[in-house]
Length: 99
View (cartoon, rainbow, N blue to C red):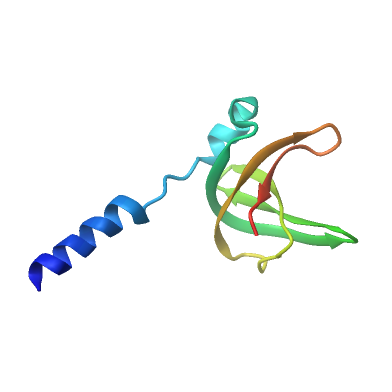
């Protein structure tokens, strides 16, 4: 039983931990991440839904990014989001969240 527990804990450590990309890195060198699938974490601010567009700002300390998402978490909630880092002529850099 102990071996099974140890094996389960090891599997969780190996496969359950996903490295997050710091918002600082996305702010300082955004072009380096374009087209990459990334995971980010932060606090939700300014969720908005306008017609077919919806999204929010994700903040971590002094750094923030825009997230385009069909689902809108509550303002102030802590979220971890997976998506593709994009660049648009009008919107600039943003994370297109996986739904």
